[in-house]
Each structure stands twice: as C-alpha cells, then as structure tokens.
Amino acid sequence: MSDSPAKVAAVLAQLDRVILGKGQQLRLCLACLLARGHLLIEDIPGVGKTMLAHALAKTLGLSLQRIQFTSDLLPSDVLGVSVFDRNSGEFRFQHGPIFSQLVLADEINRASPKSQSALLEAMEEHQVTLDGKTMALPDPFFVIATQNPLDQAGTFPLPESQLDRFLMRVHLGYPAAAEERELLHGTDRRELVATLGAVLDQHSLRELQRQVLAMHISPALLDYVQALVAHTRNRLDVRHGLSPRAAIGLVRAARAWTLIEGRSAVTPEHVQAVFAAVVEHRIRHDAASTGLATRLLEAVPIP
Image (cartoon, rainbow, N blue to C red; front, side, top):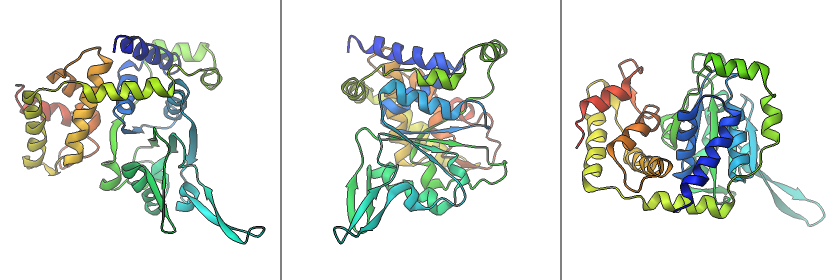
C-alpha cells in the first residue's frame, strides 16, 4: 500500500488539468470507480460532464465506448444484435458498445425507459443475456452516465431501479471565476484530453480496488451507517428510504474515500464526505432536496 497515495495523487493531478477547480467532485468520481461502482454525473449541458468521462477513461487506462442516448435508441443499439451470416448459414452475434471496460451513457435520460432498462442487468450482474445466452462483460466494467436536469425538454426520469444501481451521483456546477478565465485563455480541453496517457495500468487499478475492500471499518462505524440508513426509512418526509444495496454502497464508498485520504481505517468523516453523493439520488422525499443530506447527517449522532 506504500505507493498507493502517490498513484492516487497522480490520477487526481491529471484529472485536475482537464476539469479545473473541481477537486472535491474529482475525488468523489475516483472513489466511485475504486469502489467498483457506477457513476451518474448530472448537470446542465456544457460544464464538462462528457469530458470528465473521457479523462477518467484515459487516466485509468480503460477502453471506452460512448453511447449517445436519444429518443429513438433501441436496446439492441446498446447490447448488440444477432445477424444472419449467409456464408456460414448461421447467426452471428455483433457485440454492442456495452462490451467495453468503461461505457459512457451520454444524456441517458433522453432515451426511452425501454432503452434505459437495457443497462440494468449489465450494471448489476456485469453480464448480458440475449437470445437465451449469457455473456460476461469486461473486467473491470463501469458505466458513467451523464444526465441533464429533469426540467429540460426531452428528458425521461430514470426509474428507482436504475438510480439505485449508480453508486454515486455528482454535480459539477459552474466553474469559479479564476478557473473560467483559465478556460477562456488556455488550451482547448478536448485537445488536452486527446494527449492524456494512462496513469494506472490494469494491475494497479485492481490492486487499489482490492485495497479499498481491505480498509478497516469498526463495529461502531457500522452502527453509525445502520443508524443513518434507518433514519431515512423512518422519516415522515421520506417516502422511500435507503435500500440494503445503498447501505452496502455507502460503506464501499467510505472505504474508497479512506484510501484516497491515505488512511487505513474508516472514520465518521469519511462516511459523511461521500454521504450526499451516495444517497440523495436514491431517496424519494416530500421536502426540498437542497440540504437533505446535511439534515440527515445532523439528525444522527456520531458514535
């Protein structure tokens, strides 16, 4: 584990060259992938969502396929299709873009629910079943989806079953004035992404993922996580609290944040650092969403 902090720092430094002034969001994105989770980036067009996905793929040395989700996208456009080969007289399966280490589902909420659901088995089981045949997806396998705000024209809300499969949701937001001025003066970000090299190889990435699973979490911390989860299920203004999958994801994300921080044991602060990104897209509530995670954390005492 001695060189893990240096590897993590190198990854974050390269990402910071592309996405300026978003250190917290970049750390969340890296934590999500190190925890073997799928990532949802939600924001208005033009703030760098797609560019961030490309930069992550380049930096982590992953093969990438981009799927542009549109209203006429079909499940076969995502998964693949069997076509008849006249020469052999047999059907031959043409793999879809889902068969990649990192799949960028760009503007996922512009496709119909039928096409969105094509990702469900892949995200949960890391496999695809077509024509009665099950095919494994590459290892590692990540989905990074970008999403426009739901009040924009031509969007279809993601169902709860889909949202629950994303470990984290991250918002990039507008850049600060200094970073925006550098964007105006500096190199075109797309050209910069094209020049990026891999900071990690496959072995190093898997080793970091193994170290995430080895991060120590005490029984008291597990009690804290369970108390947070139980509180979301008991609040009157929350219609659907956190699922067991969400609780497991919160622990994995906290462990990944612990690794990024260069620590060996999870603390309450690590849980709190990832809490909003892990839970807010999963909760169906009556109150305004602004500050929901903060209110939930304030309601549960730290052990």
